[in-house]
Image 1 (cartoon, rainbow, N blue to C red):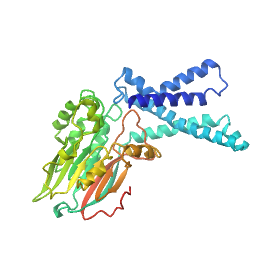
Image 2 (cartoon, one colour):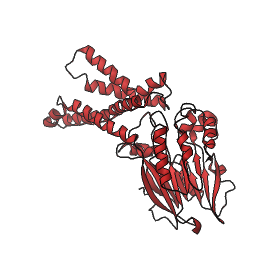
Image 3 (cartoon, rainbow, N blue to C red):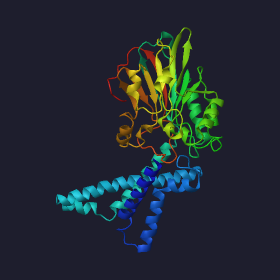
Image 4 (cartoon, rainbow, N blue to C red):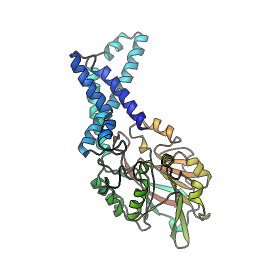
Length: 387
C-alpha cells in the first residue's frame, strides 16, 4: 500500500508540474527547480518516513505535518482539476468548439486552479484536525431486553493519536465523550499511530474515558504497524477491555447483551490471529442480542447471517473528501458512511474521530463521535439504504 501511495504521488507530482510550470515563460532552470519542489511535496510522506519515523507515523512537528499535508493534498486536488480541464480540452477540440478551447487554454486558468486547490486543501486539513462533532442516532434491535431500552453506547473509532493529533486533541475528544454520559464506550480500532514510547503522552488521555459499563476496544489495521503486543498491554493498562476474536456480556439484572469483537485482516502480515467471527461468538448466550465490533465494514453480510443485530465499524473515514466515498466504498463491501440495513442487521459505519497524519484532510465529510441509543423492535431502515 505504501509503495502504491508513493507511486501515485510521484505520478501526480510529475503531471501537475508538467501542466502547471512548463507552459510558463520562465527560464529552464526555474521550471526544473519548481518541478522538483512540487514533486518532492507530492511524495513528502515517503521522504519524511525515510528520515523521520514511518509512513504510518511521521515523527516531525505538528506544524510541519500540517503544512506538508496541505501541500500534498493541494497537489492531489490540482491533479484532479487539471485532468478534468485536459479532458475537456481534448473533447472540445474533437467537437470543434473553438471558444471552449480558447477558454480552457487561458494563461491564468491553471495558476488560478492551483490557488483554489491550495485554499481548499488548507480548509480540508483544518477540518481534519478539528475536534469531532457529536452525532446521535437510535437503533432498533429485535429482542432487546426491556432493561436495555434507552441504553446509550458511545462509539469512537479511528482516533489516530499521533504527532498531528496529539494528547491535547485526544483529551478534548475524551471530554466531549464523557459529557454525553454514555452507559458504555466502544472503540472500533485505529486508536494510535506509532510506537508506545512515541505516543506515551498522546494516548494516555484515553484512560480518562468514563462509562458505568466501561470501555471496550478492538484493533484496527494501524495497531499492527508498530508494536501490536505492546499496544494491547498499554490499552489494558488504561482499563480498556480489548476483544481479540472474543466477546463479553453487559448485564442489567437478569437481562444481557453480548459485545463481540474481531481482529483486523492485516494481522496476516505479522503472523497474528486473523479475524474469526466463529471464535468471537463461541459460547455466547443465544438469547442475548449481539453487538459486533469490526473495524472494517466489508464483512457485514457474514455477520448478519450469523445473527448479529448491530455491527459498529470505522476504517473508511467516510471517504474524507466528497466524491472519494465512491472509491472507498468499493474496497469496503459497498459501505462507507452512516447506517445500513444488511438483511435483519443494522450496520453503522462511523466517519471516525481523527485521521491518519499522512492524509489528514476532510472536505464535506466531518469527523464524528457517535452516540447510539438502543431501542427494542425492528429497525425500519429500508434494506441497503445508508444515512
